[in-house]
Image (tube, rainbow, N blue to C red; front, top):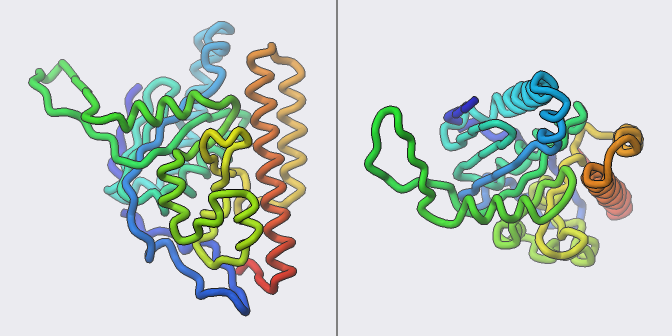
Length: 275
């Protein structure tokens, strides 16, 4: 199944912080637009097909339905393009700053349904070389390495992870370069920028950056434990390869919970609050 959606929405106002002594809050609208490409795969489809075609179909059907529902408004923006093929998800557009939070919502919504998505976002908008073809002969030759970089980064980690290419992460964090490290984030935690940037941090192995997608304005601290408990219950019934994916997803949730909780505590101490 091949679904292509031409997707400008008016970006939702990002969650903002107010600080008595901090610099004025800066919205994503004031930041330079950065072209991007996202590539992701739904984990566990191979195992589902072993159980039967209908089992795999139902899993993929849930994947397609949830992704479409989550990105419905996102696709009102003609600058965003989404394509789903089998267990893969491709997204590209002109503004990574506003898109990254919407893509993160796909990860968290799927996780709530027990579906693990692993993906990566890189700078540059995927495009294809113009080729001689026929109406029933489709050619898609990428004209640069954008797709290769996204697919390669996606395969570097286990679990339901939203990876961010270092080059893109550095561009997104250009207004708060301290946030490129964990210690720098704590040092300048009161920096007043788009709240979504707080979710970008180095991976534990420092091979790239990741987006802590489960931390959102609607998630309470206690919800992390509930989601972790569900994942552990499934992990106990899986083989070694699958357990690794679940284990890394649980570790990602713990990092999300930790930064979420730390941020809330530090902002309260510093006089900031979520509006």
